Image (cartoon, rainbow, N blue to C red; front, side, top):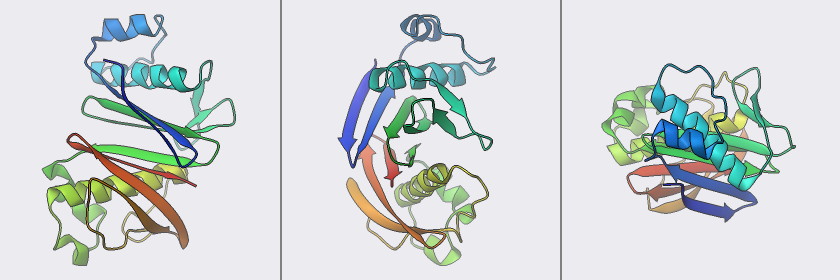
Amino acid sequence: MGIIKKIEENNCIISLWEINETLDALMQLSANRKIPDFINEKRKKEHLTSRLLLNKISPNTTISYNEFGAPILDNNLHISISHSKNFVAIIISEQQVGMDIEAISEKALRLAPKFVSEKTRTTLNKEKATLIWCLKEAVFKWHQKGKVDFIKDIIIPPFIAEEKGQIKAQFKKKELILNYQKINTHYLAYVCN
């Protein structure tokens, strides 16, 4: 299907692809690029799609990974990559970035004790739990260094979930501006500071 959404705002470029192609079709689009030895076909598709998205935004750029597994580019731009169900999204900028995309599901409610304080959990539904998880994952990916307590280190103030919005979060006493939007049955969140 290719790129279904491209967002250029806040000095960032975000591109989103819905994977409907076969692995062979993606390999042909990627000029038969070598892919890592993943066992899972879905993971292979995500890998190829993230490189196709990057090539559309920043041709001839190579991705490598830091010691914590965060992607880095060879051209001094910053990148974050995320995937959920059949969606793959990337964000690039001259500023440090973090992004996440999550399908709205009951899973976020089940996992809420790992990322939301007990007091906040009493008012959650699956949509808001998914959005909070997505926001916190975006901050974690922005940090790029691991070792983050999602409850204590990333504080999301009370808010009303909407189709699109902006939230000021606290990360280890630093204020970060998070942007989010609902895309079909997913939430996409990003920080670009």
